[in-house]
Amino acid sequence: MDKIKLQGYINIAKKAGYVIIGGDKLYNYNKKLYLVIYSNDASKNTLKVIEKLKQRDVPIIALENLEDIMNIKNCKIIAIKNKNLSDIILDAINN
Image (cartoon, rainbow, N blue to C red; front, top):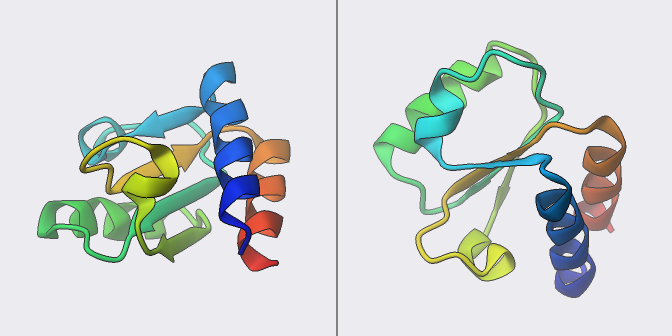
């Protein structure tokens, strides 16, 4: 995984308005999501959100140090709501 590329792609998605940050916003989010990324050290409440999202067949990826990638302190979960950007971010994570 190239951290710099991943940061760049997530930053592009964030600037375009395609990133949802935080479990509180995702818990009752009913629109289509294409990718969910969470931190390995997520809290119980964040894990509850992830369990709820698993029922919607959303790809869910666990990463170390998500807050370093996002440059947001205590960032434990994000979601991408754009198909093309989520595919690019998945490729960056898998390579």
